[in-house]
Image (cartoon, rainbow, N blue to C red):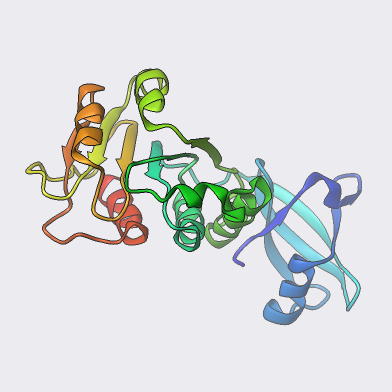
Length: 236
Protein backbone atom coordinates (compact mmCIF):
# COMPACT_ATOMS: atom_id res chain seq x y z
CA UNK A 1 0.00 0.00 0.00
CA UNK A 2 1.94 3.02 -1.30
CA UNK A 3 -0.95 5.40 -0.60
CA UNK A 4 -3.69 5.27 2.02
CA UNK A 5 -6.91 5.99 0.18
CA UNK A 6 -9.34 8.08 2.23
CA UNK A 7 -13.11 8.29 2.02
CA UNK A 8 -15.53 11.00 3.11
CA UNK A 9 -16.69 9.09 6.18
CA UNK A 10 -13.11 8.81 7.48
CA UNK A 11 -13.05 12.50 8.50
CA UNK A 12 -13.61 13.31 12.15
CA UNK A 13 -12.48 16.94 12.52
CA UNK A 14 -12.86 19.85 10.10
CA UNK A 15 -11.57 17.75 7.19
CA UNK A 16 -8.11 17.88 8.76
CA UNK A 17 -8.15 14.65 10.77
CA UNK A 18 -9.17 11.11 9.81
CA UNK A 19 -9.76 7.98 11.85
CA UNK A 20 -9.24 4.58 10.20
CA UNK A 21 -10.09 1.04 11.21
CA UNK A 22 -10.13 -2.27 9.39
CA UNK A 23 -7.82 -3.18 6.49
CA UNK A 24 -6.02 0.17 6.18
CA UNK A 25 -5.44 0.48 9.92
CA UNK A 26 -4.08 -3.08 10.09
CA UNK A 27 -1.80 -2.50 7.11
CA UNK A 28 -0.25 0.63 8.58
CA UNK A 29 0.10 -1.05 11.97
CA UNK A 30 1.57 -4.35 10.79
CA UNK A 31 3.28 -3.57 7.47
CA UNK A 32 4.34 0.07 7.70
CA UNK A 33 4.86 -0.37 11.44
CA UNK A 34 4.12 3.31 11.83
CA UNK A 35 4.13 5.17 15.11
CA UNK A 36 2.95 8.57 16.28
CA UNK A 37 4.74 11.33 14.37
CA UNK A 38 5.34 9.29 11.20
CA UNK A 39 4.16 10.71 7.90
CA UNK A 40 2.38 8.61 5.29
CA UNK A 41 1.16 9.23 1.75
CA UNK A 42 -2.61 9.73 1.64
CA UNK A 43 -5.20 10.69 -0.93
CA UNK A 44 -8.92 11.40 -0.99
CA UNK A 45 -10.98 9.23 -3.32
CA UNK A 46 -11.50 11.22 -6.55
CA UNK A 47 -9.59 14.12 -5.01
CA UNK A 48 -6.15 15.41 -4.06
CA UNK A 49 -3.20 13.55 -2.58
CA UNK A 50 -0.92 14.64 0.24
CA UNK A 51 0.51 13.61 3.60
CA UNK A 52 -0.93 12.24 6.80
CA UNK A 53 0.87 12.75 10.11
CA UNK A 54 0.08 9.92 12.54
CA UNK A 55 -1.31 11.28 15.80
CA UNK A 56 -2.47 7.98 17.25
CA UNK A 57 -2.08 4.33 16.34
CA UNK A 58 -2.92 1.34 18.50
CA UNK A 59 -4.84 -1.92 18.21
CA UNK A 60 -8.14 -0.04 17.91
CA UNK A 61 -7.60 2.72 15.35
CA UNK A 62 -5.29 4.94 13.35
CA UNK A 63 -5.69 8.72 13.46
CA UNK A 64 -3.88 11.20 11.22
CA UNK A 65 -3.82 14.91 10.62
CA UNK A 66 -3.81 15.30 6.86
CA UNK A 67 -2.82 17.88 4.26
CA UNK A 68 -4.05 17.35 0.71
CA UNK A 69 -2.09 19.62 -1.60
CA UNK A 70 -1.23 17.81 -4.85
CA UNK A 71 -3.03 16.50 -7.88
CA UNK A 72 -3.04 12.74 -8.53
CA UNK A 73 -0.99 11.45 -11.48
CA UNK A 74 -2.52 12.04 -14.94
CA UNK A 75 -4.66 9.21 -16.31
CA UNK A 76 -4.04 7.25 -19.48
CA UNK A 77 -6.27 8.61 -22.24
CA UNK A 78 -7.63 5.19 -23.14
CA UNK A 79 -10.87 3.27 -23.07
CA UNK A 80 -10.07 -0.40 -22.49
CA UNK A 81 -12.58 -2.82 -24.01
CA UNK A 82 -11.95 -6.30 -22.70
CA UNK A 83 -13.59 -9.63 -23.53
CA UNK A 84 -14.53 -10.94 -20.10
CA UNK A 85 -11.67 -13.19 -18.89
CA UNK A 86 -11.73 -15.91 -16.27
CA UNK A 87 -12.73 -14.44 -12.88
CA UNK A 88 -9.34 -14.94 -11.24
CA UNK A 89 -7.65 -13.30 -14.23
CA UNK A 90 -10.14 -10.43 -14.22
CA UNK A 91 -9.16 -9.55 -10.65
CA UNK A 92 -5.52 -9.23 -11.65
CA UNK A 93 -6.32 -7.21 -14.76
CA UNK A 94 -8.54 -4.77 -12.89
CA UNK A 95 -5.78 -4.17 -10.36
CA UNK A 96 -3.04 -3.70 -12.97
CA UNK A 97 -5.17 -1.53 -15.28
CA UNK A 98 -6.15 0.67 -12.34
CA UNK A 99 -2.52 1.02 -11.24
CA UNK A 100 -1.47 1.98 -14.80
CA UNK A 101 -3.99 4.82 -14.95
CA UNK A 102 -6.84 3.34 -17.01
CA UNK A 103 -10.07 5.12 -16.08
CA UNK A 104 -12.59 3.55 -18.47
CA UNK A 105 -13.00 -0.24 -18.71
CA UNK A 106 -15.73 -2.02 -20.67
CA UNK A 107 -16.18 -5.76 -20.14
CA UNK A 108 -17.90 -7.41 -23.09
CA UNK A 109 -19.00 -10.84 -24.24
CA UNK A 110 -17.35 -12.79 -27.03
CA UNK A 111 -17.96 -16.18 -28.59
CA UNK A 112 -14.91 -17.57 -26.77
CA UNK A 113 -16.05 -16.23 -23.38
CA UNK A 114 -17.69 -18.81 -21.14
CA UNK A 115 -21.21 -17.66 -20.34
CA UNK A 116 -20.77 -18.81 -16.75
CA UNK A 117 -18.17 -16.07 -16.22
CA UNK A 118 -21.00 -13.52 -16.18
CA UNK A 119 -22.41 -15.17 -13.05
CA UNK A 120 -19.16 -14.86 -11.11
CA UNK A 121 -19.27 -12.95 -7.79
CA UNK A 122 -16.12 -11.17 -9.00
CA UNK A 123 -18.45 -9.01 -11.14
CA UNK A 124 -20.26 -7.74 -8.08
CA UNK A 125 -19.83 -3.96 -7.92
CA UNK A 126 -18.22 -4.17 -4.49
CA UNK A 127 -15.73 -6.84 -5.62
CA UNK A 128 -14.77 -4.83 -8.70
CA UNK A 129 -14.24 -1.75 -6.56
CA UNK A 130 -11.95 -3.67 -4.20
CA UNK A 131 -9.54 -4.52 -7.02
CA UNK A 132 -9.62 -0.99 -8.43
CA UNK A 133 -8.80 0.43 -5.00
CA UNK A 134 -5.83 -1.91 -4.66
CA UNK A 135 -4.56 -0.57 -7.98
CA UNK A 136 -4.99 3.05 -6.87
CA UNK A 137 -3.17 2.37 -3.61
CA UNK A 138 -0.32 0.73 -5.50
CA UNK A 139 0.13 3.64 -7.92
CA UNK A 140 -0.55 6.52 -5.49
CA UNK A 141 -3.63 7.53 -7.43
CA UNK A 142 -7.09 8.58 -6.26
CA UNK A 143 -9.35 8.71 -9.33
CA UNK A 144 -11.63 5.68 -9.40
CA UNK A 145 -11.97 4.00 -12.82
CA UNK A 146 -15.40 3.39 -14.28
CA UNK A 147 -16.34 -0.15 -15.31
CA UNK A 148 -19.21 -1.04 -17.65
CA UNK A 149 -20.59 -4.52 -18.31
CA UNK A 150 -21.96 -5.34 -21.79
CA UNK A 151 -23.13 -8.93 -22.22
CA UNK A 152 -24.20 -8.79 -25.88
CA UNK A 153 -21.43 -8.31 -28.44
CA UNK A 154 -23.39 -7.26 -31.52
CA UNK A 155 -25.63 -4.64 -29.82
CA UNK A 156 -22.55 -3.23 -28.11
CA UNK A 157 -20.66 -2.85 -31.39
CA UNK A 158 -23.66 -1.42 -33.24
CA UNK A 159 -25.14 0.82 -30.55
CA UNK A 160 -22.40 1.82 -28.09
CA UNK A 161 -19.16 1.82 -30.04
CA UNK A 162 -19.88 4.59 -32.58
CA UNK A 163 -20.08 7.25 -29.87
CA UNK A 164 -17.39 5.64 -27.74
CA UNK A 165 -14.68 5.80 -30.41
CA UNK A 166 -15.36 9.34 -31.60
CA UNK A 167 -12.17 11.39 -31.49
CA UNK A 168 -10.06 8.35 -30.59
CA UNK A 169 -7.74 5.92 -32.34
CA UNK A 170 -9.69 2.61 -32.31
CA UNK A 171 -7.44 -0.45 -32.17
CA UNK A 172 -8.18 -4.14 -31.73
CA UNK A 173 -5.30 -6.34 -30.62
CA UNK A 174 -5.53 -9.50 -32.69
CA UNK A 175 -2.92 -12.27 -33.12
CA UNK A 176 -1.80 -12.88 -36.68
CA UNK A 177 -2.66 -9.52 -38.15
CA UNK A 178 0.08 -7.84 -40.18
CA UNK A 179 0.06 -4.32 -38.71
CA UNK A 180 2.21 -3.78 -35.60
CA UNK A 181 0.77 -1.89 -32.67
CA UNK A 182 1.76 1.80 -32.80
CA UNK A 183 3.82 3.27 -29.99
CA UNK A 184 3.87 6.58 -28.11
CA UNK A 185 0.45 7.57 -29.44
CA UNK A 186 -0.32 11.23 -28.88
CA UNK A 187 -4.10 11.01 -28.92
CA UNK A 188 -6.96 9.23 -27.13
CA UNK A 189 -7.16 5.50 -27.82
CA UNK A 190 -9.95 2.94 -27.69
CA UNK A 191 -8.27 -0.45 -27.26
CA UNK A 192 -10.16 -3.74 -27.65
CA UNK A 193 -8.57 -6.95 -26.40
CA UNK A 194 -10.18 -10.33 -26.96
CA UNK A 195 -10.09 -13.56 -24.99
CA UNK A 196 -7.19 -16.04 -25.06
CA UNK A 197 -6.42 -16.61 -28.75
CA UNK A 198 -8.24 -13.45 -29.85
CA UNK A 199 -11.71 -12.57 -31.05
CA UNK A 200 -13.53 -14.79 -33.55
CA UNK A 201 -13.00 -13.75 -37.20
CA UNK A 202 -16.53 -12.38 -37.58
CA UNK A 203 -16.09 -10.35 -34.38
CA UNK A 204 -12.91 -8.81 -35.75
CA UNK A 205 -14.74 -8.04 -38.99
CA UNK A 206 -17.49 -6.26 -37.05
CA UNK A 207 -14.96 -4.21 -35.11
CA UNK A 208 -13.09 -3.30 -38.28
CA UNK A 209 -16.36 -2.31 -39.96
CA UNK A 210 -16.99 -0.02 -36.98
CA UNK A 211 -13.65 1.72 -37.60
CA UNK A 212 -11.10 -0.34 -35.66
CA UNK A 213 -7.62 -1.23 -36.95
CA UNK A 214 -6.33 -4.70 -36.16
CA UNK A 215 -2.81 -4.65 -34.71
CA UNK A 216 -0.40 -7.13 -33.16
CA UNK A 217 2.42 -7.06 -30.62
CA UNK A 218 4.54 -9.75 -32.23
CA UNK A 219 4.39 -13.42 -33.09
CA UNK A 220 3.88 -14.62 -29.54
CA UNK A 221 0.32 -15.06 -28.29
CA UNK A 222 0.24 -13.69 -24.75
CA UNK A 223 -2.16 -14.32 -21.93
CA UNK A 224 -4.65 -11.48 -21.57
CA UNK A 225 -3.26 -10.46 -18.17
CA UNK A 226 0.15 -10.03 -19.85
CA UNK A 227 -1.15 -8.47 -23.07
CA UNK A 228 -2.97 -5.65 -21.27
CA UNK A 229 0.09 -4.03 -19.62
CA UNK A 230 2.29 -4.75 -22.65
CA UNK A 231 -0.14 -2.96 -25.01
CA UNK A 232 -0.71 -0.04 -22.66
CA UNK A 233 3.02 0.43 -22.14
CA UNK A 234 3.66 0.36 -25.88
CA UNK A 235 0.84 2.77 -26.72
CA UNK A 236 1.65 5.34 -24.04
